[in-house]
Image 1 (cartoon, rainbow, N blue to C red):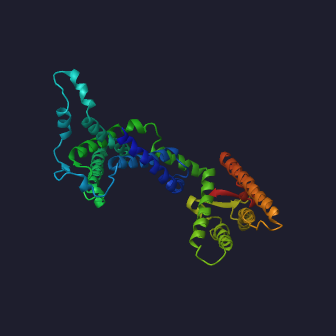
Image 2: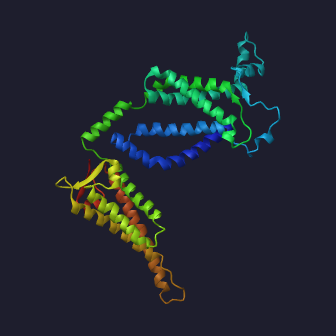
Length: 377
């Protein structure tokens, strides 16, 4: 079983890393398309990613220890099996069964050849289930079969070419039985899929719910937080990209804060770049209209937070020689700065958590200072 559990474990690790990278883009996509985070869509898409990785690694792993796989094989090694249903002959040949004696049939499932054929059949069955979700209609069964055949053909070619030349000889054979079993499994998965997808909301129900939320101008806390995260990420990435400039980092970051949280929202009449992606904007809490002074106040609150943490960071990193008469004070000041930073970070974290759990009944502190509210465009 380690032949199967090992690649699945590697797929799980790869999935975690990939999910971390695509999580924010996925959130932006769902909020732009549906107006809210669809849990069912998220489960379906991310489970498909994990399945695809698991299937790929089951086919490719374990990899040979050397790229010179030719040296590991005999000169007469066969790299192709072009005889359909060879797996049936392998099972029967290695099993002492009598067709007229059902008591001997149980021995079939104990053969490695049976396990290999059975798992090949199961490998693309989930693929057919996902295809039914994407195609929706049963009449597209031929598409599912052909796509399953194409995917398993890709797997077989990848193996027989030594992952397209990375290995100088194939380390697994091209097997026509795999093509038959995989594509048939995909087709069966396509037909049994409605039983599974009955547990999830239909696509049209997700669209309808999104339209209802948009009609009510409902905005989730996650949507607002996501816009802020995007804006802060833009500042961080831009700061790294501009690190080659011979200007103190503080001035570069200050300029970026001004551009992202002040100049752009003023030019776009209440939208930061993050808000533009999420289709939301800032308006005055009373007039429900664009407020330049509100944008300025909101920026001041955000930038003040940056200044406080930046100042505490500078103070905590002051270093004096131990012989200095002020060394003892520097130790207490550095420790105090660290403690204050930790307390402020905790308070900020609690504030964000309360905002998230309030489900739209509260505002982030800088929106409160700016006397602003967030609305859909």
